[in-house]
Amino acid sequence: MSPESIRFDRAAGFYDETRGFPPGEDRHIAALIAQAAYLTPSSRVLEVGVGTGRIALPLAGHVGAIVGIDLARPMLERLLAKRTAEPVRVVEGDVTRLPLAPGLFDAAVAVHVFHLVPDWPDALREVARALRPGGRLVSGWNEGDRGMGESALWRAWDAAVGAITRRNVGVPRERYRTFLEDEGWRPAGDLLVHRYVTRHTPRGFIDQIERRVWSSFWRLPDADLARGLAAVRAAMRELGLDPDQPLEHVARFNVQAYLPPDR
Ligand SMILES: C[S@@+](CC[C@H](N)C(=O)[O-])C[C@H]1O[C@@H](n2cnc3c(N)ncnc32)[C@H](O)[C@@H]1O
Image 1 (cartoon, rainbow, N blue to C red):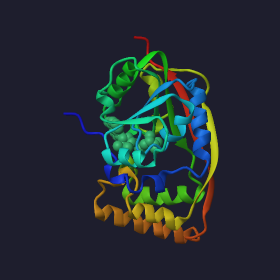
Image 2: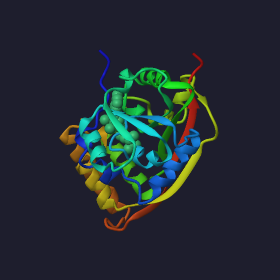
Image 3: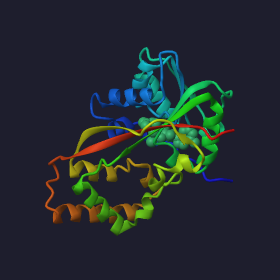
């Protein structure tokens, strides 16, 4: 039996608070996705790993309909609680076995999901099956949203606990830019990038570790968490970082459209 995907049931209560974009940035990101996939007000879009609708809800204004699929019912319930008139429907299901007929969608969207799916090549085949001929998959991912201070704190964590604790079960971090091409998907159009400023305090960063908000921390033994936290706190003092002074840096949200491998 293959290992299981990381589902976000436990994150539903804190996902938007910890992963939300700064106010207004979601509109720019949705516009970039619409541009990359040539979306129109009649487009039918599938979002795999839709979560709380962080992408789908702002994207809905550009399209005719979105179907969002996710393993985690509590995440979908969050989406439904936020939805007003947006044409977004949700389906509880697995991207490696889409419970959908073939060729239904003009485009598919995947943002921060394939790193959670051990069988991600199967998932890609399912996405290809769901697309109509000529339909595009838009992959979106964040990059570079760590300033020097936060990077130093992560280095302290890795030195104390091991970077392996942050290893993905699915697509590895270093393959985010290449994994689709490695599987035969063809880039369609340029990489589009939206830059925006984020602000995090060191105290907030430590608080997020303590609360295990990132999925790679969910299976970490308590003793490892305590050791890592001690190292991060020590690094914060050594670096002279004010725990409450926000560290400001530029985040990049990347958007790249792809056409599926030739069938
Ligand atoms: C990091 S969240 C991203 C949510 C959304 N795309 C966004 O950018 O805000 C990943 C989501 O993928 C879901 N997920 C993980 N494995 C999945 C699978 N095999 N099939 C469907 N959803 C999956 C999780 O439950 C979670 O809601």
